Length: 338
Image: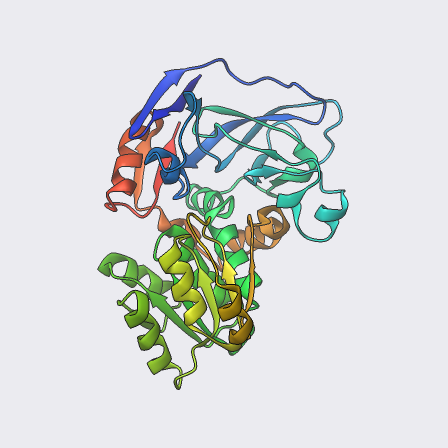
């Protein structure tokens, strides 16, 4: 089969690899309908997360079940499925408490920019649609496998409630998905922090009521100007840098909440400043599997169209161009079709 392999910084190649097989009785193998490049893949692509050896890459996927192990009972061959980037058993205490991405038996589902994928712990990881989706629905469902689920997590972690004023730091695919999530959860005012016109437009179509173009202290000042001088009720951090995290914390009103969805790189939080801010903070790998049934229903009933974050579609053989386009911010998110 064909698969994208990361050799080192700015070096992605599509190669022929052995197709995955059932290894454990709880596995499933799916034929990939579509996959994509994640913003977090760029940390590896840029060499910020050093690659030790050439390795298959990608962790977002939807597809058709090809084969299942003897112990798999919730999905069967021929079904269209959506899964999370962390495999989870769905039965451990952490899963039952709503944190499948911290499953006691979790496994990372990698190498998904490929024609076929082995998914461990299939019963706790994959969710089948009731019917085969249309092409557009399948694209929306692909977004749910990570960025929409992660944006939803940012809103849940921050504690978004109906009537809230919400600020979103970051205008990548996760940030735009977080705008959509805040709208769906009933936020009355949604402030998108973005300096890119095309992304501002999509953010507005997803539900943003205001756009702030400044960053850092100037961005914080603008948000406070919009919120009677105190800051937003909830701030969704969707980048993962020191600057974006501080911007999120400083933009939140006393007693408000910050949801951290961006994977932190070089981030340090001043405990004393946090103590006196009265701001609540929650983050961690998004428990996407927890949200999939609800998100799938919203897609299949036409309530949300998160697949609009895909503004570049390429064949899998051109995966390197997808990475390059996202790295150069010529694309929000690249969809790859095997």
